[in-house]
Amino acid sequence: MDILTFMGEAGGLLLRVLAVIAPLLAWQWTIGLAAHYRANAGPVGLTVAASVMVGIGALAALLPGATLTWDAIIAPGGFWDLTLWEFMSLSIDIARRAIPTLLATLQFDDERRNFQAWIAAALALWFVRMAIGLIAAPRHRGGRFLIAELATFAVGVFGAIYTGPLLLWSVNRLNFWLFLLLVLFIQDWRYDEPPLVVRLAARLTGRVRRHQPLPDNIP
Image (cartoon, rainbow, N blue to C red; front, side, top):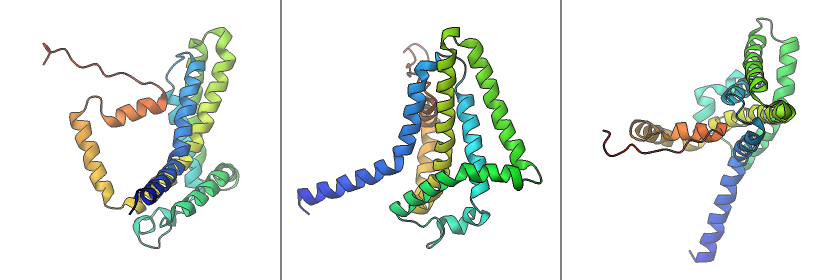
């Protein structure tokens, strides 16, 4: 293999990786950009948690139970056994239909009121966050805070709607390699401070903390 062929294949792989993670990067970028307008007005993690809850509810309303079985996830020819471009097309379709399906479910197909209770809990959590933020934010920044919160919430909802299928598709693609990743996460959690998962969550919520090593005289 010559260098041009190698570079072409490497570039194609990079483009495929970027295509997959682009929505997640947009999610993180929006939360980071909105941090300037929040002015440290309360815990943004509540907004992220509430938006993820709405996204999970939308996925539960849209995806049939048959798509969430172990065979559908990992079996060859199963629902999630897709090429990259098939997955991207499915993701766009899911993102387009998820919220309308959730609204229709809330209105016409929620006899046990499970979805209503779940969405009500999410919105209550977000209301608490908004109340804390409006109290803590300076008066002249109240409008900017609301816009930043709405943008963060909307991106969080669609980020969760995208991440769910991405995880299921990744399980199908990686299969048993996921067990190796799990071992690496466990080892990182045990021996790194702060753990990688905590650092990723901090970046996602825009609350990045620099790790400060302990002084030599402290065990």
